[in-house]
Every structure is written in C-alpha cells, then in structure tokens.
Length: 238
Image 1 (spheres, rainbow, N blue to C red):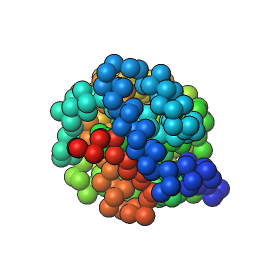
Image 2 (image 1 turned 90 degrees about the vertical axis):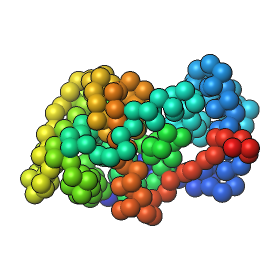
Image 3 (image 1 turned 135 degrees about the vertical axis):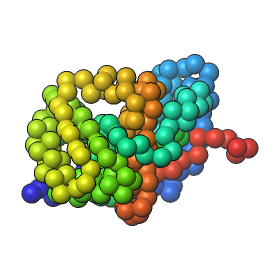
C-alpha cells in the first residue's frame, strides 16, 4: 500500500510556523471583526489576505478557523456533550481528518471546537497506509463511547468510495458497534437535515439539528503528536 502524508504541504512549516503566528492571529481577529459585521467570508478573506500578504493556503486556513459569534452560539446550542447511542457520520470528512493527523500534517482548531484539515477531496480519494489505522481508531472510539449504531455516509461520486465502504464494513465486523455505510450523491444536503451528526463541515453544522464533536477528543487522546494550529481570533481583552 502506498505511503502517503495526507494533507502534507512543504511550505506549511514556514507559513504556519512560530514566525507567522503573530500575523495570522492579527488576521484572524480582523476577519472575525468583518464577519460579525455582515461581510461574506470570501470578500473578507480576500481583503484581510491582501492586507497581510497571506498565501492562498493561509487565507483558506483562516476562513476554516473563524466563524461569526452568532454561528458559534448556534453551534454550541446544538452540540451534544455526550455521545448518543446512534451517530450519523460524514465519512470522508471524518476519516480524512484522522489520516491528516496520523500523517503529522497541518490541522486547524476551529473557533467552534472542531478540528479541520486543508486536504480537500476535489472528487478523488484513494486508500493509503494511514486509512486502516484511522478507521481502527475511529471504530474503537465509537465502542468506548458506548455508541451502538454508526451510519456512515460517503459521497457516491468520489473515486474509491466503494473501496472505503468495504474497508469500513470489514473492520467493523470485529467491533461491537453496528456499522452501516451508504453511498449517497449529496451527503452534505442529507446531513444538513439530520441529527446526531459527526462532521466538521461548517455548512452542515449550521443546518443540522444536532452534532457531536467526535474527532477532537479522539485526536487529543490517541494522536497527541498531531499538529493542530491554534490561533486566537479574539482581541487581547478577551
């Protein structure tokens, strides 16, 4: 099986390293200020990015980290603090983040408490050497939490979604958790109408009925070496 560092970008060490933190923190605070005043994230990110001479990847990271205060309040209201007996998982979103964590590549601590990545699907996916470990950690965590049923949704149009489905079912055969995996043409739209959702996708979090932050505790407890960028989007008085 091919050895791959999921989400790895050589420039990340410099663009998100210690020497860049002051500039990124200032940019995050300014972006939050504009978002709270009604600016859309694309135009605000462009304005702030140009002002601070940020790369496209730095701008994308800020957009994924930062949220409006209103969105944060609503997400906190819907967040489940304990895992329910049944969970619905955004499959690729969840597993890719774990693969990135196992690869030592850049992860982002969102203001809403989620952990996000910059890997991106772009319609293609392949199983790599980190995939089996990611699935094992995920299923083990579900069992530890007392989850009885886990329904994974995978984007039907993404390449190798069928292979990932087979891998999930194979690994789950040895677990107490009852696992179902379905391929669907519009996972985002489907999850946006559901409850007990596991995802870090901001659009789904804003629309779903309730959600559980599975990856954060899983990464913190089982992959402590993961590189998670933590910015401070609040001014010093906070």
